[in-house]
Length: 237
Image (cartoon, rainbow, N blue to C red; front, side, top):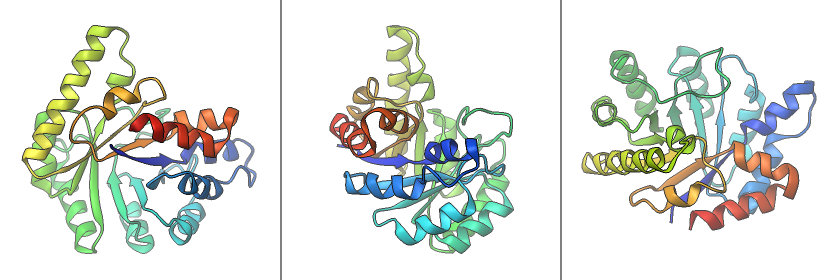
């Protein structure tokens, strides 16, 4: 059974729409943990469109499970990660014009910089994951630069329009998981997962953790945060 980590970015998205102090992603993280989540995820973006530096610092003090900081591989973010010391860092691609993360980090294209970032972060004792597409060459590259874990991008699977594409993407993800395991990389998965499609991903072998945010936060507006998290945990089993 994959463990569920809850991304609370979009609680902050609602807050930032009015530049107010509510709803509070820190409170959402606390309720998620009380409901059984195994970890909390936040993406501190360079444009600070949702999570703010203050959120990250408070979460570091309050999260009792595992705090995963998603970040672009930049000098600014490295310095923040080394100051805050989350339990885990996940390197992700980032474009200012995107609505949400559009795909995995292209390690091959920027291998020297990413290898340098990985080395510095791991030298300071932090566990490191890289968010990548289910591509065998990217998995090999993640291993070469020294990642501890890969998070497999499930967006194409989640957005599949027909059964053929759905099955094809599931097969790609399973092959990516198998290749990662052969190289000794731990595996998580996420992006676009919801209450309908998560059961097929959770049924694949080899995934330790599922990272889900938007669907849980959206559902929490209707049923409340605790029930939204508990319902997703049940589907991950």
